Image 1 (spheres, rainbow over the protein chains, first blue to last red):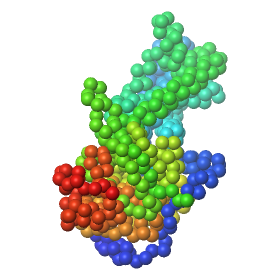
Image 2: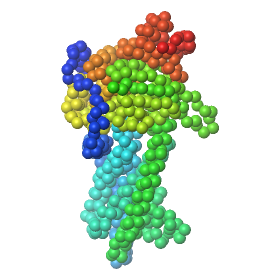
Image 3: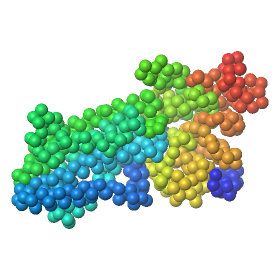
Image 4: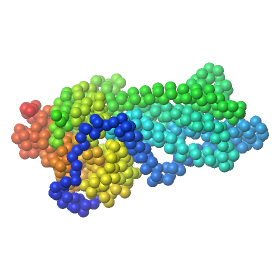
Amino acid sequence: MGAPDDRSEGRGDLNRPRRDIRRVSDTRGELNRSRHDTLRASLRRIWGLVYRHVALYRRSWPRLVELMYWPILQMVVWGFITTYVAGMQPGTGAVAAGALLGAVLLWEIALRGQMGFALSFLEEIWSRNLGHVFVSPLRPRELVAALMTMSVIRTAVGVVPAMLLAWLLYGFGIFTLGPAVVGFFAALIMMGWAVAMLVTALILRHGAGAEALAWSVLFGITPFAAVFYPVSVLPAWLQPFSLAIPAAHVFEGMRGALIGGHMAWDHLAYAFLLDAAWLAVAAWVFMRQFEGARVRGALLNIGE
Amino acid sequence: MTPPALLIENLAKTYPARKGAAPPKPAVDGLSFTLPQGATWGLLGGNGAGKTTTIAMLLGLLVPSGGRVLALGHDMATDRFAALARMNFSSPYVALPHRLSVAENLRIYAHLYDISDTEARIAELARDLQLGDLLDRPAGQLSAGQKTRVALAKALINRPALLLLDEPTASLDPDTGDWVRSWLERYRAESGCAILLASHNMAEVERLCAHVLMLKEGKIVDQGSPEALIARYGREDLEQVFLDIARGTRAETAEVT
């Protein structure tokens, strides 16, 4: 025990009657809350969990560097590859190079979005803090909202420097795709959240054994998500599977804008529809596993 | 009418069986008790008696197989978040993020419990629990005694009407343990908070608790005030009563009140 001198001072305090300890909270505050108060309290709880992660990043620059490291490295490697390809075949090569760089940047959004959600949840497990979090009034939907917020923050910190680098080094501006690029970002990060929710559900079900999926799962989807080539390249039997992935529509839309010069809004609409379906399924699975963990007692020793 | 801090009726928990294994025994088997507002009760039992399972069900971390938990008048099966806003919990086995400072940790929980005067509340707790010099230090760099004080500050951040404490003085030296017990005694008296205390320290339970629930194999095998239990078993202290019950030498013959 540190500060024994503090304790002896404290023991003196203990013997004095105190007037500044207020009586315990009463029920009326909770019962009489207006809808506005309820929403404000909910946002505050979400912020509480976001603050926990922001505070961690604020005092650890290596963690910030780690967020930017892979997206920047990817951009540098792919930037040189596309420069080489564009040099080999001016014209079509340059267009293909732009499509490749755009794909790298946009896929990083999905990857970082998914990892940002799942790793923020894992941080709670690693710090053995989930017991405190789950006995607070934080609702599961607020936990999900906080993890989504962290996912957006981590993705922005990780991908924005890579975007700037693509513009400075290779003259590729992702925003030349027009306002639809915001829709692309949103559709991809939403897909990342859906996958991350499924990963989190698996962690709730299988504990630490499922942790590795937080890093690897989205890489397994890459070949079918039409990131670097159109869906038509895939075998016919695989194409319906590919078209059920929201990202495939985003990348088809991106290539349409970059190569064909027209924005395929229908693809963006499909991407959002599929995202809604994926998120609904993922939320259902997450809640089932969360309640299952409460039945099995897994919340008591998750991560051990 | 003010509801009791806890109303427990036939609470039971049997963990799901593992594939291929025999059906497990109930971890908790038909607990019923009523913890009045403002009282400190003890939950005693050997390892595997069902204390942790019981506390987890009272906190909503674990779904009971049967029975009912009413915490501060709220049914934990249907309305647990209303109760959780007015409850809190401390255990040396659940950590706080160790890279964050003490103040940051307390701020997180002030947000989670929607405390309106966050900084004033943290300052108040820092003064009460002598955390002033620790507020800017990472939680992971504190000694066991300092961590206990920080954990108590976290547990009191929302001025809980019901406080569940799991071995609050485990691994503390006698001096620090005594400080914590004195602090809890004074806090309960001045705040009116009800406390349910799980502990293996019988002297602590004798000192703090007005009533003790003795658990064995998931059931309450005896209960009463520490003095009544000691008298009933003809022993000198609660530790000897605990040993009688744990070893089965007297529990079956003692009359459950």
